[in-house]
Length: 136
Length: 136
DNA sequence: CCTTGAACCTCTAGTGACTGGAGAGATTAA
DNA sequence: TTAATCTCTCCAGTCACTAGAGGTTCAAGG
Image 1: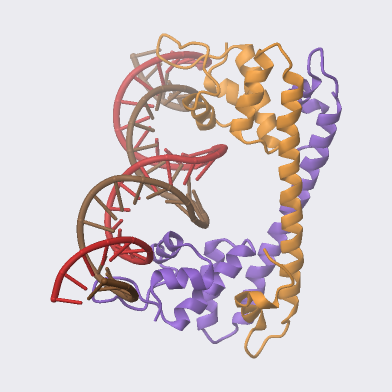
Image 2: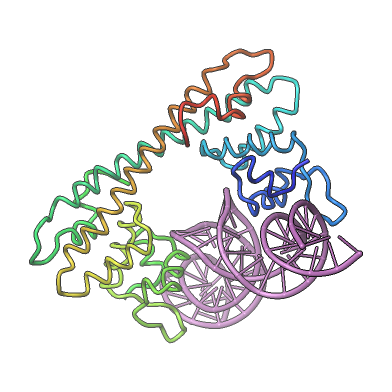
C-alpha cells in the first residue's frame, strides 16, 4: 500500500492533484490508515498512471472518466474508446489549424512596423481587423 | 453614445463580457444614464474593438492591458509593443509544436488497435507511457 | 518511551476569461 | 398607459488545478 506522498512520487502527480481527483470521483483511495490517512493499492497507482498519461496527451478529465468506465466493462468498448480518442485527435488538429492561422496573422502584424520612431503601426494593425486576411 | 447592447452589437462582444471588462478595469464606461445604465462613446467602442481583436488573436488580457497603456503614452512604445507581440508569437509557436507532437502520439496510439473484438490495445497504449516515443 | 520533523488532514479561496441565471428596475414604441 | 425589451447588481459555475491556514499523524532516532 502507498501513502499519498509515495503515490505522488511513483506517478509524478502532485499530492493536491491526487486529492482533487478523489474529490471529483475519478480516483478513490483504497482505504484509510488508523489515523485517517489515504492508502492506495497497486491498482490505484495504475489507474492514476492512466489518468496522468491521458492528461499529458491533453485529454480532458471527462473523456478520461469515460475511458476508465469503458475499460472496466466488457461489451464493445474498443469502438467507443476509438471514438473518444478520435474526437480528441480531431480537436487537436482543429486547434493546430487555428493556431497556425493566428501565427501567420501575427507574423504579418509584427512586420508592418519595424522602426523605432513615429507612431507604431503595430498598434494600429492590432486595432483593425479589416487589415487581416481572414476571420479568427 | 451607445447603450451596452448597442456596443455589443457594434463589436460582437457579449454584454456580460463588456461588464466583465469593466470589472477588471479594462474598459471603463463613459458615464451613466439617469437610470444608471452604462453609456459609451466612440472612443470606448474603438477601445473595445482593439480588445476584441487582440483577444481573437489569442493575446491574454494582461498583454492587452499593457498594449493599451502603451498606446496612450509617447516615448518609445513601438519597441515595447513589438516585445509583447513577439512574446505572444513565440508562445503560439511553442503551443503549435507541442500540439503537433501530441497529434503524432495520438495518431500512433489510435493505430495500435483497429479491430472490434478482444481486449482493446488502445486503452493499454493510453495507460503505458513507455510505448510513447518521447516526453509530453 | 518520547521527541522531533516530515508528511498528512480538511477547508477555503484563487487562477483566466468569461458565461449564465435570478430578481428587480429602466427605456422605448405603440 | 402598457407591454416588450433592455439593463441593473449580485452570485455561482466552468476547467484543472494550486496555494495557504491551521491542525493531526507517522516514522525514525535517542
